[in-house]
Image 1 (tube, protein in one colour):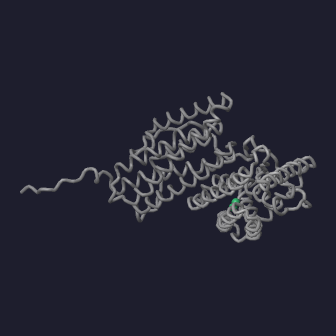
Image 2: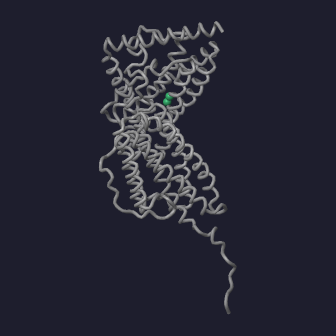
Image 3: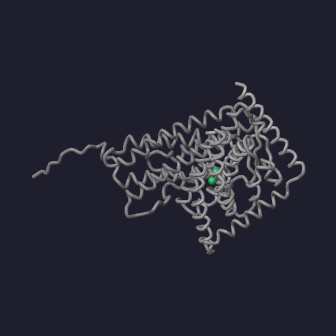
Length: 439
Ligand SMILES: [Fe+2]
Ligand SMILES: [Fe+2]
C-alpha cells in the first residue's frame, strides 16, 4: 500500500534551525569585526561630524550583534560555540579593511561595501526566514535594516564634502581601496545567505592599531590644554557665563574620551570578549553624546569652530603606554567630577539655562554607568594578568602621575594661548548676553 503525504510548504521549510544559526553566526562575526574597526578608527578620523556619528553607528551595530549572538545560542542550545569556521575569509577581509590607507578609505569601505552588503544580507534573510519559526529574528533584523539604511545615507552625506575638498591623490587612493574591497568581497561570495566561498584574503598583512596621536578637525583650535585652569590653578572655574562656557567646553572636550573609549574597545576586544565590546560600544556612544552636547550648546550661543579649543592632554598622556592606562583614564578622569555635577545642575537651574542643566543631568546618569564599567573591566584585565582584581586603585595612581607629567610640561606660550582663547570666548559671551538683554 502506498503511503500518502500532505504537501509541504516549501517556503516556510527552506531553512532549518541549524541552517539559520549558521547564517546568523556569520552576521554576528561581521558586525563584531565592524564594531572593532569603527571604534579603532575614532582617533584616526579627523572630520568632527563623522567622528561624532560613528559612535552611534557602532553602538547600533553592537546591539544588533548582541541580538544575533543570543539568537544563535538559542538556536544551537545547548552549544555556546561561535566558531569562525567557513566564514574565515569574510572575517579576515573585514579585519584587513581596518588597514585602510587613509580615513576616507575606511569610511567609504563602510558606506559603500560592508554596510550595504550586510543590509542586503538581512533583507535576503528576512525574505527566506519563516515568520513563525524564526519570529524573534524578524524583529531585530527589521530594525537593523532601517539602521543600516540611515547609517549609509548619513555617512555618504557627511563624507561628500570631503570627497570634493580633500586632495585628489588621497581620494583616488580611497576609491581604489574601496574597489579592492568590493572585488574581494565578491570573490569570496559576499555576506549573503549562502555559504562563504572562502579563499585567501591578502589585502594587507599589517596589524591595525589605533592612532596614538589623535587626528583632529582643522576647523577647531588645536591645543593640548583646553582651559587655563588645567595648567594655571589660580584661574577660577567661574560663575554665570564663565561656568556655562567652562561646562560646555568640558563637554566638547570629551572628544578625547570618545577617541580613548574607541581605542580600548579595539585593544581589549580579543582578550575581554563580547561582553566587554558590548559595554565599551555604549561607552563610546555616550562620550560622543556628551561631546556633541557641548558642541551644540556652543554653536547655539553663536560660537564658531575656529573659536573653540580642542585639547589632547589626557589622550597624549597615554601615548605608547600599556592601554590599561587608557581604560584607567576613562574611568578616573570621566568620573572625577561626578560629585560636583548635582551642584552644577542646581546652578544652571538658577541661571535659567535649561539646556546646560538638562545635558549635565543626562551626563550624570551616564557617568554612573561608566563608573561600573570602569571597575568591572579594569578588574577583569588585572585578573587576566594574574594580578589582584581589587588593585585597580593603583592604576588610578599611575593615571594621575601620567597626566600630571603632561600638565607640568605646559609651556608659558601654551598658557598664554589658552588664556587668550578663553578671554576671547568670555568677551564674546558677554556681548551675546548684552545683545540678548537688549531684545
Ligand atoms: Fe562623558
Ligand atoms: Fe564617561
